[in-house]
Amino acid sequence: MTLKGDLPNAKKAYEEALASNREIGRKVGVARALKNIADVLYAQGDLIAAKRMYEEELAIFREIGNRSGIAETLSNIASGLYAEGDLAGSNMMAQQSLGNQIQIGEKGGAAGTQLQLAKLSIAEGRPSEGERSVRRAVVEFRKERSRDSEASAREVLARSLLAQGKLAEARKVIDRATTLAAASLDLDVRLPLAITSARIGAASGNIGVATRTLDATLADAKKFSFLEYELEARLALGEIEIKSGKSASGRARLEALEKDARAKGFGLIAREAAEALK
Image 1 (cartoon, one colour):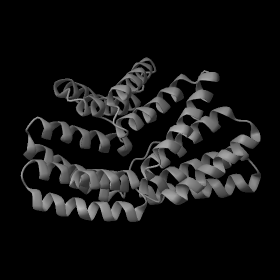
Image 2 (image 1 turned 120 degrees about the horizontal axis):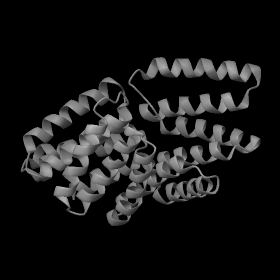
Image 3 (image 1 turned 45 degrees about the vertical axis):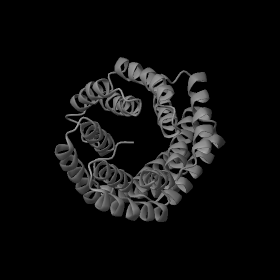
Image 4 (image 1 turned 60 degrees about the vertical axis):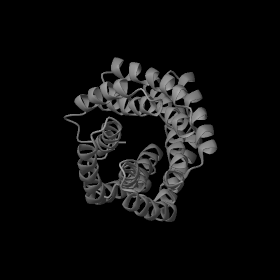
């Protein structure tokens, strides 16, 4: 997914491409347009509509026997289930995707799916397993010289290290990721990097810098309508406020976040907000 911020115009262009490909009966084009629209809908926080598009795309790829397309779409569905909080369902889809990618020799695609599996491991409280999975992805993306993909992988690696208390190593990894993504226009790379960097900074005692980074990230996420990262920035801010002694404001932020995330279908973030309130 490469999303540079202008989601409404991107969606309009993809819908036009969808209509054109439907008109001429070009199934691969229809599937790709559905995928692109779904990516935008996911970024905007409409998980239900995005899932519907991905499932239609998957049906087309299965009909025409496109295993690469099937694998990629399964991975995208896994991401949606992860956001919803259905970790078992997400794992099942991701494993199916990875199996297909390994069989057809899609190393880059497999690395992307390993990234999704690493996120699942971290969410399930197994960050050391996530670390092992994501390190394989980092190696592959470095081989492919894919700077954005490597940056994203390193962001997840830093998250796994932070969860294990390996603070110095997490800082080194996130700094390298930030350098790799310095020229990136992809908000799907830059926004999570900023959030994880702030979390690591806060854990190192740099509360003021971390808070300012998250405030700026939250503003960007709102400006460009990237709902998931807006919710994640709010979660990080609430957790940091509580840990830094601002319990009342932190709890108020997290209580509002839990309600908003649940209403939008982001079950995982809602659960994490609830856990932080305990």
